[in-house]
Amino acid sequence: MDLIDDVLGAELFQVKNVTVVSALGRVNSTGWSRPTLLQRIYLQPPANGIQEIDFVASPPSGQVMSVQLPIAAFTEISTQPWLKGIEVISANGSVVADFDNKQTNKKLKNVVLTTRDISKWDIVSFEDSIQPTGGSKLVVDGWSTRVSLEFKKLKHHLVLSISGPSPSDASRCFQQALNAGAVAAVASVYLTGGLALQAAINVLVATLTTCLGQATIQVNNHSEWEYWWT
Image (tube, rainbow, N blue to C red; front, side):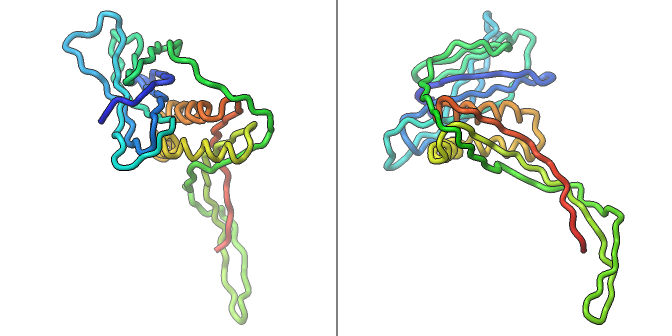
């Protein structure tokens, strides 16, 4: 695995004794895969309290297209008593962030978008809590009569909405985030109930913001009961 070209931003959050680190970077061609944040191991804790982390990915093989694309990753590290912040390192620079998420990074290019279209994607959904409601009724089916029972199940949806850009721009940037693994990371953590969900969402929002510039991006969790009769 190789260092990616540039790191654009990083955040860290402390959850109990675990620190969740998320980072957004950029590569200069298609074909990069498996973005990973690799923690450097020390014989002695660093004097400045900054944990160095390499932002790496599997480089492309074969024919590629030269284009700048976002790439994102997150990881969990143990919260050591000496830990004050992290430095995420790429081939062409680094970003330092502390627990207040004050960071030193490169400027991002913003594109001003004036349309007010709203685009939505159902990132992931699942069902649970299937149970009878206690309702019943008689159903006449031809010459026979049967008892029909009412059931319900709880449906959960994680919905991404982008307000501002045109639907075509929103779709293009969503596809970039999909290719960078940012959407899959959110879906995976959401389904497994991981503590890093907010960090994964932050990576996704940062990836989309880098692509879109000015936009309102939200990821909302919706749950509703669905009823049916047997």
